[in-house]
Length: 81
Image (cartoon, rainbow, N blue to C red; front, side):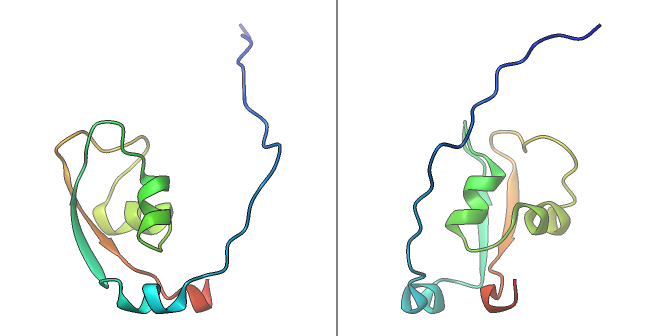
C-alpha cells in the first residue's frame, strides 16, 4: 500500500566563502556527546567533515545516534573533498 508523504523542496541556497583561518585553527579530532535533537548532517557541517565519515569512524548504521551516545569526529581535508 502506498501512502503520501510530504517533503520540503529546496527553494534557495546561500553560499559563504570558506574561512580558511578558522578551519586551520579547528581541532582535528573532537569527542562529542550527542544531545537531544542532534543530527549527524549538522555535526558534519559544523566540524568540517561528512556524515558518511562520521558513520564510518563510529560504525553507525542507519538513523541517528541516541542522546548521550559518545562519538568521535575527525576533521576532513576539505581541499580534497
